[in-house]
Amino acid sequence: MSLSIIFMVIGGMLVAIGSFCNLVAAIGVLRLPNFFIRIHALTISIVGGTFTPLIGCGFITLGLENLGNERLFISGGIFLTSILTIILGPTGSHALTRAAYRSKTVIFKPKFVDHLEEKER
Amino acid sequence: MIENYIETIIRASLIIYFISVLLYVIRLLRGPSIPDMVLAIDAITYSFITIFILLVLILNIPLLVTCAMVLSLFVYVLNIYIAKYLESHEMGE
Image (cartoon, rainbow over all chains, first blue to last red; front, top):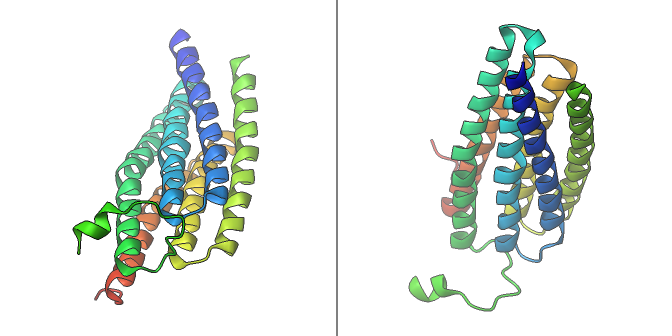
């Protein structure tokens, strides 16, 4: 009984932190000036806004005692989704950034220093 | 007693997630180049993964977990295909 209360408190805190992180990421994606700076806000949205609330929802589902054995199925699926997100999300965003830099399709306008350009010359 | 607090937190989080989806849609419509639009689609899909998981807890529909799992794989495939197309102008075999 007390273990389920601990699980639900931890899960509620993680869900609240995740929703705050996703709001910050949305404002960042809308307001930041450049593609290579906006990709930081996308990573906040992946790690802080999706991975953290999914872990929290898995703990909340483990704490719901009245679901019976069905809660193990639901929380297993939620933990599997969070592991897939934390592995595949930064990999995909890194590949997208690399392709956008190599193909020169984005406008790199407020640019102060670019060490990669000198290195690849 | 604690279930009421958890339900309040989940309902407030749903409202915040829908507001951030609206902000991402503004960036999707305004994006000056193709990678900006792909970035906005990524963020929208990750938000919908979390919205599906929160709807599982609110509405008690366990099958929505499978939809969220498939969406998290779809975003990865979209990123890799767009990256391959931008770099070498082909979609793979």
